[in-house]
Length: 554
Image (cartoon, rainbow, N blue to C red; front, side, top):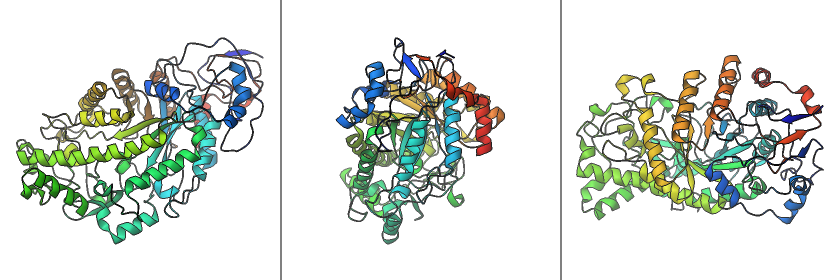
C-alpha cells in the first residue's frame, strides 16, 4: 500500500532514534519514506526562524549520530524547525501543573504518553511544562535533579511534538487555577524563615512566599548567592543537561520573573481569601530591601519624606478604586508624589525583568531556543482613569500613560517574545461593575509590541472549552499576528466528547486550514513524503477516537 502523506492526521508515530538523552548510537533511519522535491519553506514565527539560523553547530559526535537521517535529504541541523503550521499560528498545550511532582517523579506516565499522541493527531505543535525550581533543586543548593524532565523530553520527542520549557522560579499554590502545591526549595524556605524580608511584603506586614523579592536581586541572601546568581546557575545546568535538544525538541524557554511565572508583583493573591476579583490589590513594597530602595530614590528626588513607605491611601486588596484616595478619579496617583512612586515601583519591576532576561540570554543565546516572558492580562478596572489593578501589579499604565511600551522595549532589548494572557476574553462577558476591557487591553499590548519590534504570543487566562472562547482567540490571533498560542490546559475535561471536537476545530482554524502534522524525525529536510510502508497505521485511531481513549486513561 502506498499513499502521499498530506492529510491532517499522520499515520506515523515517529520515534527519534537519535535521542541524546538515551545515550545510545543512532539506528538506521526507518525504511518508511523516500524524499520527493521539498515543498515551500514553513512560515514559522520570525523569532523561531532567527533562533534556528543562529543555533550552534552540532558536535562531531552528534553529526555522526544524525548521519543516516541527514543523508536522506542532504541537510538538517540542530536548530531546524519541523512540523510547524504553514500560514497559521502554532498551538501548544500546557501540561498539568504536577506533571513532575514535588518529589521529582513524572506523574501518570501512560496517560501523559496517550495524551501527547492525541494532541499530535489533532495537529498541535507541542506542549508547555513548568520546570519547577522547587522540584529540581530541592535537595540543596546546586544539586539538580533533571531525571523526570529528561524522561518527559523523551516522551515529547517520541510523540513528534515540541516543548516550551518554563523556568518556574515561583511556587505553585494559592493562585487562580493552581491545583497542587509545589513550594520553593526547602533550603530557600529556611532562608525565608531566618530572613523574612527576602519575600514580598504588603502594608500590613503579610509575607508572600510565592517568589523572592526583587529588592534583593543583587544581594547574597541565598546561602551566599544572589537570587540572580541562583537563577543563572539553574538555567546553566538546564542548558548543559538538555544541550542537544535546545532549538529542536525544546523550541522555547519561557523565563519566570514573578508569581505565576509572570513579570509582576504578587498584588492579588487568592490564598486564604486575601484578594477577590475585582479587587484593586495592594502594593508589595514593604520588605526592608524594597524600603531601602524607595528611601534612596526619594532622597535622590529631593523629597526624603516620600521614602517613608508606600502610599497611605491606597486601600486594601478587595476594595474598588473609588473607595480609596489614591486610585479614585483624580486621586493621589495623578499627583507629583503619585508619579514619583509609580515610576519607582514599575521601574524596579522592569529592572528585575531585564536582569533575569540578561541571565537567560547569556545561557540560551545561540542554542536555537526562543526566549519568552509572560505579562499578566490584568483587565479589571481598565476602563477607569487610574487602572488601579495594573498599578499595584507593577504596570504603570493609566489613561494618560502607556505602561506596556517600556516592557515591550525591555523584551526587545533581550530578543524575547512577549507572551500575553486573556486572549479568550470578550468585554461583553465581563461584569459591568468591574470596568473590564480585555479586548482593549490586548489591542494596547499588541500596539506596544509592534512598535518595539517584539513578537507577540498568547494564552487563555482561564480554562475554556466553548466555541465562543475559541472563536475569540482565533480572531485575536489573526488581528494580532500571534507568533504562537498556548492553550490552558491539558486535563481530562479537554478530551471529553464535545470539548475535544471543539478543540480540534480550533487548532485547524488557527492553522488557516492548511496546517500539517509533525513529520517523522527521519524527514530532516521538511519535504513532503511518499509513504511506502504504513504498517504502523493499522493500529492508529482517528483523532476523535484518540481523544476519547485519552479521556478514559486520564
